[in-house]
Structure formats: C-alpha cells, structure tokens
Amino acid sequence: MVKIKICGLCNREDYISAVRLGVDFTGFIFVPSSKRYIEPQVALEISESISGKNKKVGVFVNESINKIREIYNIAKLDIVQLHGEETVEFCEKLSLPYLKVIRVKDLESLNLMDNYQIDTFLLDTFKKDIYGGTGKAFDHDLLKYAVKKGKKIIVAGGVSEKNIENILKYSPFGVDINSSIETSPGIKDEYKMKNIISKIRDMEIKNGNG
Image (cartoon, helix red, strand yellow):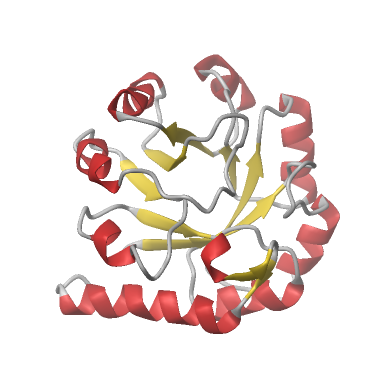
C-alpha cells in the first residue's frame, strides 16, 4: 500500500482527522517564514491528543543542527524532513532519522539522490527561492526514472484528486498531500482529506495492491 503523508498540520482537529483516517505520516512545518509554521510545543500538544500508528515528521529548511535536534526532542518527532540545501556531511552529522527532499526541475535533478546514503526521498517541485508549499506539480513522467534508482519515493508538490491516479501508476512509495486539501494555508478540509485518501485506497484495491 502506498504511504500517505498529510503535511502542514497546524491544529488539533486536523491532526485527529488525519490520524483517524489512517495516514502513515503527519507533517509539521518548523520553518518560521512558512504560512503553516507551528511552534514545537504546540505540535507536541496536538500530537499527544490522539494516539495512532502515524510517524511524526518535522520539516526544516537550512536550519542548524542544534536547532533541529532541539525541536526534534521538544516535539517528539520520529523523522526529520530536510527541505533545503543540506549537504551529505550535514545530514550524517545530524545523526537523526531523516528523509531528504529533492526539488525537481528536470531529469538531472534526480541525480542528487545518488549522493545520499539513505533509502527514502521526497520529490517536490522546484521553484526559485521557495521551498515547498507551491501547490504546483512537477513533470510526473520523471517519476519513472526516479523509481528506477531503487529508492523509496514520496511524491509531493500539488498532489490532488486530479493527478493522483497518474502519480500512482508509477508505483511511488508514498504521496505527500497538503495545499489541495486546504480551505486556507494550514486549515484542512476534512471532506477533501477523506476523499483523496479514499480514492487512493480504492485505486489500490482496483489494481490489486490493497
């Protein structure tokens, strides 16, 4: 089954909805400039409101190692998502479970995955000076080259009901859903959330992967 990540969670109600809908990963954004920024202590309080099998992911962009470690501990995260220009050396020195984001512009962008000794990557849409949250999709035909690298690929960037069927035909490890299920930045629509998750699971059953 494809893994589902709901990112940009900012309040208790949306978090509880995501967990009850059985998502695999819940994402909190710890980037002060983001419209979906959340304080680490608030993220902890939200995540402790309901128990589930979901892994808690913290999103960071070009943050210091000490700050990432501090927030990781405060929010009791499971995984760190590095969304900036973090080097291989930086990631190894961090010494925390992490997944690296590759901002996809073209086929050559995918070669960056070869530098990191990890098995899971998140592919997002490249946009100059903007790290995620664009709501725009990259060329999903590039996914066939990404999955050939033998890595676990999580697809982000404008993932919605409109393109989810096309994305799933490339058999990614997971999908990251954010802006397409919002009424405004950081405020999720439970109906939209439920719809896209149901569509994903229905397609898996139809294709014999459920």
